[in-house]
Length: 359
Image 1 (cartoon, one colour):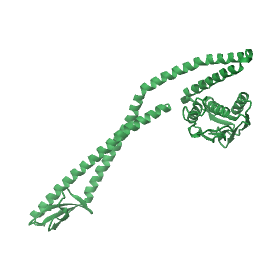
Image 2 (cartoon, rainbow, N blue to C red; image 1 turned 135 degrees about the vertical axis):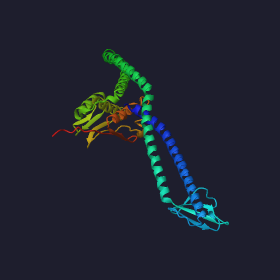
Image 3 (tube, helix red, strand yellow; image 1 turned 30 degrees about the vertical axis):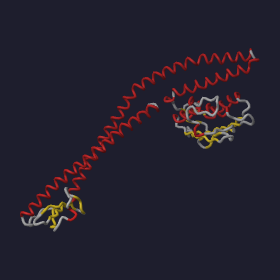
C-alpha cells in the first residue's frame, strides 16, 4: 500500500470512527441513565410497599436490607421523588400519621452491585460495537479508495511510458551538444546554456523515474566506498574548481542502490551548485553509522524548509531535489538531518542501515 493511500485510509477511518464512537458513547450514557432511573423507580415501589407494611403492622414489620426512621417534619427530604444515596443507603421520605413522616432506608450494596453489572455490560457492548465499526470503517475506506487507486495506477502507467519515451530525445540532444561543441566553439556560451538546461531536464527525469518506483524499492547490500568514490570522480569532473575530501569507514550498507544514488546525487548537486567560487570544499565522511556530506558554500537561509516541495532559495532551482531526498530517505528507513547557516555552509547527515559482515 502506498503512503498516500495509507494516509487517506487513516484519515477516513478517523473521521468515520470518531463520529460513530461519539454516537456510541452518547447512546451508552443515555441507556445507563435510563436503566438507573428504572432501577430507582423499582426501588421506590419496594420502599412504598415496605412503608405500607410498617403502617399496617404498627411499626412491627421487618424486612431484610430495609430500615426506617420516624420524623416529625419533612426537613430537607421534602423534594425527594426518587431514592437518593446517603452514606451506605438509598433513602426516600413517605408520609406516616398525624403530620409525621417515615424515612425509609435501603442498603445500597445490592443496588450498586446491580448498577455496576449494568455498567460493565454496557461498556462491553460499546467496545464490541466500536471494534465492529472500526473494522467496517477500514473496509469502507478501502472501497472508497478503489476508484482513486485505479485512476492513479492509470496515470502512473502513462507517466512511466512517457518517461521512457522522453529518454530517447534527451540522449539525442546530449549527443548533438557534444558535436556542436567541437564544430561551433564560437557559440560555446549558448551551447553551454543548452547543455545545462538539458542536464536539468535529465535530473528531473531521473527524479521522477525513481519516485514512481518508490514503493517497490528492493533492499540489498551496496558497497558504500565504491559508490562514493564513483560519485566523487563524476562530480570532480563536472566541477573541477571544487575540492573533494572523502573518508569512508563503512563498507557495506543495506539499501536500494538506485534510490540511494539518487539521494547522494541530489545532495551533491545542491552542494556543488551553492558552493563558493573560491576555496570550495565538499567533505564526505562517515561517523559511526552516519554518512555526512558537508560543504563550505553559501548556506541556507531556512534549512527547516529545505525538504518542503517547491521550496528553493535560487531562481534557477525547481525545489523538488531535497523534497525527493526526504521522501526516498523515509522509504529506505534512513533518518536525515540538515544543519546550515547562511554564509557558513551546509551539513547533511544520513543515518544508515549497516550491512554486517559474517564472521
